[in-house]
Length: 412
Image 1 (tube, rainbow, N blue to C red):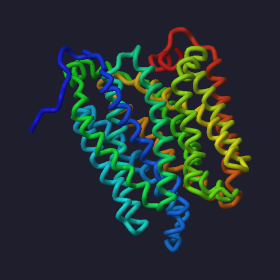
Image 2: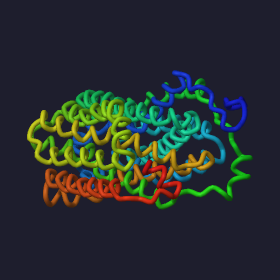
Image 3: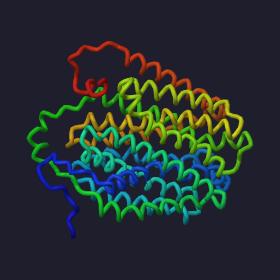
Image 4: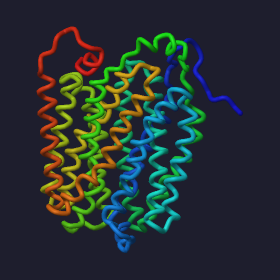
């Protein structure tokens, strides 16, 4: 069996990241948003097709969010495997499973079978996202890492635009057609094999310093809770916005894709142009305050949307906050994680993000059925405003100069 490519030299040696390697990592990161975005526009048609299935309204939304549960369950395991056994073997197996599980939706003719394929897709995303995040921490020195994360956030958002729009166009043809897009993962596998290398294992460092490694557990827990809260509210957009638009007379899946993609496009612009300047001006806690404020404004605007144009404007405002929030979450997580524990920390962040995605329809569906879609988005906006206020207070709260490692990472 051919050995996996490795980096040469002393532990900690970081060769220059070539454009091909960087692009491969960015494309692999975009697979994570493709897991849900691609089929979001086809949800109403999928629900109609399976209308005879018990609880089809909730089950049709689970087609989008069930991967989140399995990502949340499997990401910590994937993180441990990544730290112990290496990043690339886990990554290669996950990308292959991703393609096979995603494409299975083209062949299944029962909602239960589709949900099984979506669960396996979640297992694959857990391995892919954890490996890619850990590799970014391994490949890039601290000075370059924030820039890469801004690029990754933009790339994921641009990918969301492409996948949502293409998914909407394909859903106009047939609700199954968007599942074909998952075949893109097969095209990325050769690039991953050719251009990525296995970082040095650093077992000697881990063994020698393991007793001294201290994770800032309180700060990590706060970071994971922020990621969970963001995902809970964000996933109202792909799971509920298509149905809100249908209620106001916008029924074409391609139009739904455009409305959701507006947020992704603005998120990409925000990641590239706003994230680093906002961080430099406001500091890390200030980024959270800024992001939650923009997210809240977007949700409140969605709650009063009465046309396609106003819906696109609202999701674009939301995208401003999403474009600064997502790269900031990953940047903070990698800063907090020592090299030998990056996989585990990446797995914890991945779990938080996708647990929120899975729980979102379960926590909101009953309220929306009782009070309507607009009310659901309005409540989410108010919740985000509370988080913005809390982040603002935390950013302005005076702190002693001698701080714990984790507080230093978050507050500097």
